[in-house]
Amino acid sequence: MILLDGKKTSNDIKDEITAEVSKMKANGEKVPHLAAVIVGSDGASLTYVNSKVRACERVGFESTLVQLPNTVSEVELLDKIEELNQNDAIDGFIVQLPLPKQIDDQKILMAIHPDKDVDGFHPANFGKMALDMSTFIPATPFGILELLERYDVDTKGKHTVVIGRSHIVGRPMSILMGRKGWPGNSTVTLTHSHTKNITQITSQADIIISALGVPDFLKAEMVKDDAVIIDVGITRVPDDQAAKGYVIKGDVDFENVSKKASYITPVPGGVGPMTIAMLLKNTLLARERHRAK
Ligand code: NAP
Image (tube, rainbow, N blue to C red; front, side, top):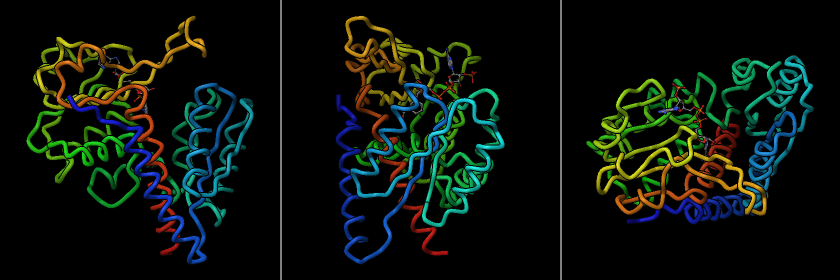
C-alpha cells in the first residue's frame, strides 16, 4: 500500500509557488493577492480561512481577510463583493461557506466576478470545466487530480466510484474523472444518498473517491483488493481525551481499508492540505489572467 501523502505533496507545491513568487519579486513584479471573506465566527470556518491566509504568507502572496458579523445583510455582503470585484490590487477572492441563513449562497457565488473566482464555483467557470476549457477547477477536486498525477496513478479505463454529489467536490470530481486525458478517461459512477446497494457498486470500483462526511462509512468489505482510495471526508468527532475536545475523522475506515488498498489518502494529511495548495495555484492563475488583460 502506498500512502498518498497530501501534506508532503502540498509542501512541494508550495515550495514551487514560493520559487515563482521569488522570481516575480526579483523582477519587480506585483505578487499574487488573495482575499478571503468570512461571515460570523464558526470555529471550523475560521480555522479553514486562517490556514488559507497562513498559506499565502508561506508562499509570499499578499492576502486580505475580510471579517463580517453574523448579522450582515445580503445587500451588505453583495456590496463588499462588488468592492472586491472592482479592486485592482486583488487577483482573486473566496467567500467561505457556509453563510448565515439570511443570505442566499447562490446569489453570493453568482456575484463574484468569474475572473476572480479562485474557488471555481461560479457557473461560468463550472461550465468551462465541464467543457474542457481552461478555467479555475474547484480546489478540492483539483488537489485530488494533482495527487493522482504526482503519484502516477493510472486512471484510464478504470471504474471510478464517487460517493457524494456536492457542487464543490463530488459533482465536479465525477466530471473531471470522466474527461478526456489524464488524470481522467475513467468510467464514472456517481453515488448519493438515494443510491441502492452501494456496497455492490463500490466493491467493483478500481478508484473510490468518498466525499459524504460520515466517519468510517467506507468499510473494508465495500472495497476490492488493490483499489485506490481517496478520502475527502473531514468530520469533527467529539472526544474528551483529545486536547481540542474533538478528533478529525475521514469517511474511510482507514485501519482496515488500508490493508486492501493499493493507494490511500490519510485523514488528516491527505486531501485537506492539497485543497489549500490548489487554492494558491488558482490564485497564481488569476494573477496571470489579470496581468494579461
Ligand atoms: P455535502 O454537501 O455535505 O453532501 C454530502 C453528499 O453525500 C450528498 O451528495 C449526499 O447525498 C451524499 N450522501 C449522504 N449520505 C450518503 C450515503 N449514505 N450514501 C451515499 N451518499 C451519501 O458534501 P461536501 O460538502 O462535499 O462534504 C463532504 C465531506 O467532505 C465533508 O466531511 C466535508 O467536511 C469534507 N470536505 C473536505 C474538503 C477537504 O479539503 N478535504 C473539502 C470539502 C469538503 P444527497 O445529495 O442525496 O443528499
